[in-house]
Length: 451
Image 1 (spheres, one colour):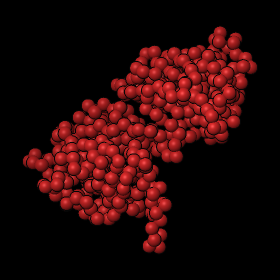
Image 2 (cartoon, helix red, strand yellow):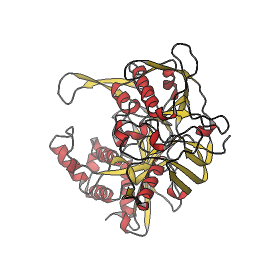
Image 3 (cartoon, one colour):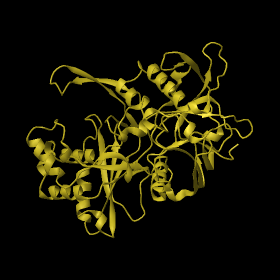
Image 4 (cartoon, rainbow, N blue to C red):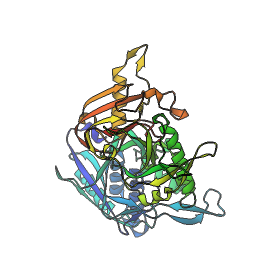
């Protein structure tokens, strides 16, 4: 029975230490299903299989019935990518090159399972079995693993990655998963892709998403080098120019598949947290702001090395007809209104909502509330931390225009665009992006009273 049906529970903590300080697997963090497979493999490999018995089987089946675990992720960074050559398993002939993006990690990663009180013996068996795990990820990702039952308030450090209503699809074990692995192993089809009926996914999200890293560029003339000004409504168009330039500039430096997913944004929902965002920055200074766009910021995830973004310095921006529109010149500073801390945040470019909340002229407040909560969650803001939220069509800053006047990509045109103001209980660090257009130049907010 799942632990969610019991009022009193305890926590089983499995800590994974990467011996070489490196994880080369594709997914990060490693999924609970991957850990489960490593646990089975570690106890069924070599001389360890001689100790495999009914007690171990019962513990494994006990673990697969628990609710999906919380994952505590330590600080990490993405190392220098490299190419690995290997056999093409799909065609059984020839070689194939694969780009690898190692995660550098020096502290342990933790899996936390909640289980009913009174089942501590099963948890102790899992702790003993976990010490036999050899690797997690690739075969070269050697690990040593330990386990324990946590005391009431004891909790290891790390950023929490846990099941949620919205987030990334993460593979988890389920009742019968061990029997499935056993059957596939005996049939010799371990390399065959699983069918949907043989997989279970759960949505995970970060409890406290990391802030963005950024590089800021001036928009200058290709001929004279003077600073250019573009109208407020063209933010999404400028973002598209910069995205195209980034893809061209990095074409020879990184894996084409990585560029397609991360730089160009053609990725699955589960990979969206790895995407780069291209954010035109209209001038909204309280005294001198005019709403015109002279700067653009390239935002990358916290674990990405921003040095790679510097290749954009000096790149030309071209429109769809190939005409040179501007040249990027590195600025290396972000206005405090965009990158500072504030309790009050107002949109500079409108937020694209994931759906409509009006029907026949009437507001559906419940639907609006749900959409706002989802967008705030994606930005790492808890719903209960918001004191006040105002949604309207009119702009908040001088030089900005009605929300509907902002141009949007084709796939977002049918969705509502609105300005909004957030009043939070505590200060939040910028930059802040909200809505479906946050990777396409829309949904950028500026802090109030930060100058």
